[in-house]
Length: 134
Image (tube, rainbow, N blue to C red):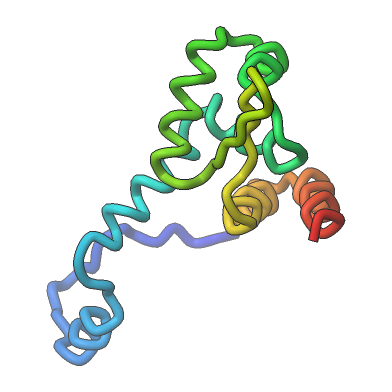
């Protein structure tokens, strides 16, 4: 049987050495704001699905909308947000705009998230796709 552990200490004791070490490892500036924004981008179900699709191949707005079952304007709004964060890039081919992931770091985030959630087969499939492109 696993013993429940309380969320708070039973006594108040601040350990100055621990506090000093912890403060030393924190990044300065807007690092955590930027990190939170990155994860917020993936916190939306539709955006997470768009990113997952773009891990496999570049796609246009029309195809993404059809696969996801949402409107093209909705997909465009999500892509605009992802482009602002430099998670996706676009290229024009005549009258069609194709979207792809901007770099492989995003693939690693999705793969780690899938593995963490217990979806190892999906994570392995994603790794195979990314490895094949490299």
